[in-house]
Image 1: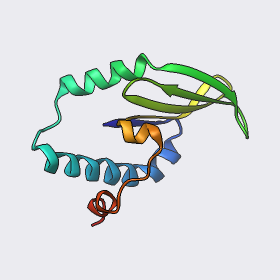
Image 2: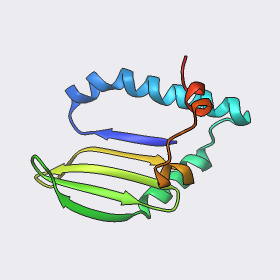
Image 3: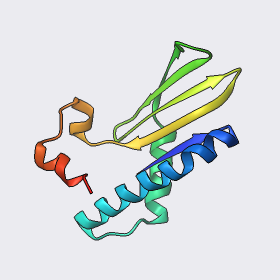
Image 4: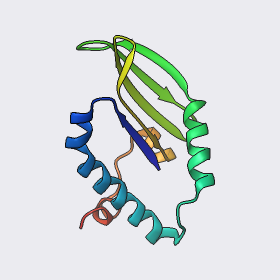
Length: 113
């Protein structure tokens, strides 16, 4: 589960097909594993978890500010320029995602088409 926000219409138009494909693939892979369907309550809980993340602010390499967010089960980032968010993304993470361990060959193979 996750979300992306893009403030510029042209950037959104360019990235939308890739974002939809990526989220659709994740949903298909997730539903194969447990047979469950997305629920509104799960989405609301995810957004609440994202809102409760701790925030760290860094000067961006380019323009603006780079924000990093971390919670128990959610991580995110945002780029803001002139006090306006340009891009923001949040994702649910597992414990292995947090430790930076590389997925096994078997796990990586599952993500191929």
